[in-house]
Amino acid sequence: MNTDKLIQILASDPLRDSHPTLKRQLLLSIGLGGGISFLMMATILKVRPDLMFAATLPFFWLKIGFALSLLWVGLYEAIKTAFPGNRKSNSYWKVVMPVLAVWIIAYWTITNPSSPDTMELVKGSTWQVCSLLIAFLSIPIFILIFYVLKDMACVRPRLTGFMAGLFSGGLAASIYSLHCPELSPVFLGIWYLLGMMIPAIAGALLGGKILRW
Image: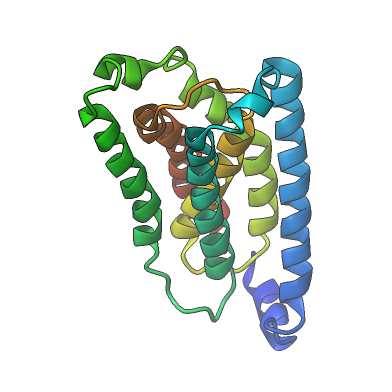
């Protein structure tokens, strides 16, 4: 965003006028990106055939909840830091909390005497591709959300980029979980987290260039 455009936005009272329009554009980009990502999963990877049974298992909802929690933090903080006039956000602790929660459950799983071998919990059957597939599914979401954010006046572009990337990864992980057979909290705390961090780190690196006005 250039200086003249920023002045026009500020002069028109952005809190009342431009925010709703930009937020609608952001929601449209999220819906479109999420739809493309879901179609990619459904056509290339396929929905797991026993999804209805998996939905009765507590660890399936832990997987969904973990992805959704980081999705929500990323979206909320990306929007919060994308507009001028908002307070500075020290929000990394919000990212840490769900990660710590999953790691605590993972530690309990490892130390449970009835649990399988630790390496089995870590690797599952898809450890070699899980993170890469989540990052792959995040691409359309990432591109479209950055397309909208570049027209906002991000005062902390790296943080906004990180949170936008985290949202992209969280939404992609939520979609990927409909295909993925893994349920181990240990697996989630390593490979799902890595899959969501790849677009988050990419967002931080690109945000300093693309989102700077």
